[in-house]
Image (cartoon, rainbow, N blue to C red; front, side, top):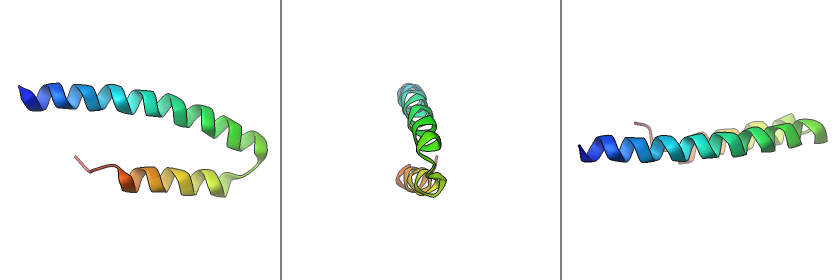
Length: 51
């Protein structure tokens, strides 16, 4: 039960970070820096613990 609650919390957190990354993605697309965006995305994936 603890793990279920924990996964629910992490799910909400990832949803929030997803919206944030979508906004930053649009911003980076406008500025025309796909490489920086990709690097940021890779760093985010690396920092995330694999479940």
